[in-house]
Image (cartoon, rainbow, N blue to C red; front, side, top):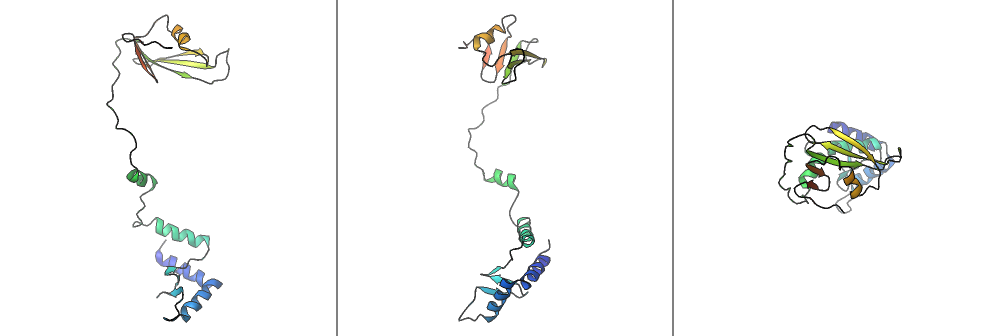
Length: 180
């Protein structure tokens, strides 16, 4: 909105308000010996304490806010840019990434995770998801929420993979760790 249009809207609203008309009277009757909080500028807009007196009207409030907030010189760069500029990083520096080795054959390197808290289906309430890194194939094994490490190991008795990558740890045949 144009600033001249905004000033004319404020001036028009002030002319039809009883509080503003009292302010105009006090501003006109003020003297240097008895100054008033009210004043009138050169374009006949009423001021209170050296600020333009904007009436309690939602349209005027919204126009004033938009005019000052969206102005190019207002210094507001948007929420995300302002936050990114002023926010101090509070984490350690990122470490070096260690890429996974390329598997030599299919199902040599896998990752696994659980999908838990599912509704009962044939006494199963969870799914173990096993994914091959080379082919991106997946096996979905039904299980239950209370599976422990020994029961999980029995799921791999037939063909153990060369390495297992989990959300919590990396296991390899060459460096076994006990799951208790």
